[in-house]
Image 1 (cartoon, rainbow, N blue to C red):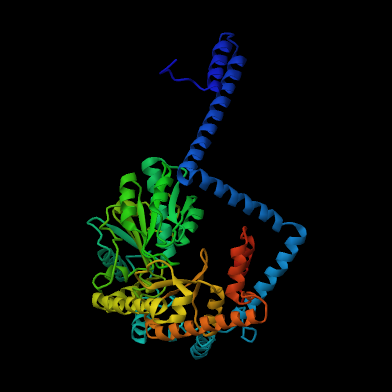
Image 2: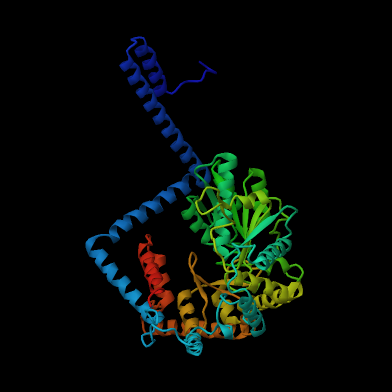
Length: 570
């Protein structure tokens, strides 16, 4: 009848069975009826749950997008089975072992003296100092000369000496004992307060210090998960992030059992597609993510649009500003273009900021900031019943190095607002000059390279129009540069730092020379009738050439695991 709700057939039959059999009055019959009803109810809930998931998938990805995802997943699974076939598996293992052996030869020098057991008698301090100097002098990429993208953000002797003095005064300090080391507690609280002020935090905002950007991101994701569980009862959490968001968000998804939805960042802006994000939001969504800027391309997502979406949908929004750190807050004052990104946007509920990047603090320092103290408390761990006493820690770590906190505090206090403003002027200014050189000043580079998006801070990513970009990466490595190879799309990025500011013109000249060199190689191959594209033989070309062509990345995973094993090869 119109306007009359209809009971699902399975449930209606179950209720009819209950009614009919209950009339028989048999306890056994009643037990069977209850079992049938429970079975039907479980089946109904199962169907309801998966129907809801399918509808969410169709809403978030659309019919075509859903089919494409299924095709990609099926292709990956089938190729995985192919790689596990006996003949193929043995061949793949052989090639992986050869690649890992090559890496080991490069990273573990054969002529070095190895110390695999404790010395029977301790060395005198002069002997230790001599060996430390030997280790410091090992052949390495010359970050001191500005040849490394990122990694070292300051490196001047005067600040290094100050940081070393701070280490010395607080070598044994541990913030887990604030009564024993009150000075470290004070410095840590002040560092967090300074960074909160930098990002225009409202009254009642809070934060903690962490060991780095990854831990800051992990804690923000944990806080969002716990908030959703406590306040909304969410037991199957999901978060939505741009595909360019830092990989630490994917790690958080694995560690904390949060399903991650990746959203495309299409050309020409390479910003997160906010409409795609909106379609993916459902009742299990615990967090939206934006970057200011992202690591791969140096692009600031449209945080203002994400903020409006977060407010509309009542979902927390995290802004990853680990890389932008102490540059993005100074862009406007330095006279550069900027975009809204911080707590002045109502939807922004948390921000991660690395003090050990452009804050110039020693490695091992970062912060995660929250709009409210309640949000911060969701990342706390408290155990009131442990036999060792009541235990409480603000994050993952228990004991932490107070010396690093002291080094961070000393760095912030010695640099000050004027120092960070000046470094922003120098670093972003050099970045703008390098962009202009690639796009306009150099005809060679302007013809061959293309900057991805419109980077506003310190990172430039570029791809090649006709050449293999990974051959260019290997060519730059041969000239002593340590740049970052990217994928999806294939590209290279350089993160400018104070050391690079001094040599950016050499970087530009070497890049021009390498592009000319690769073009000449192609001309020679064409003249010899071998075709324009050469065989990928360099490290970057080999790794990313293979990785980009495989629908299943298990071979790359094995290579990466082999690399990690080598790190602990004494």
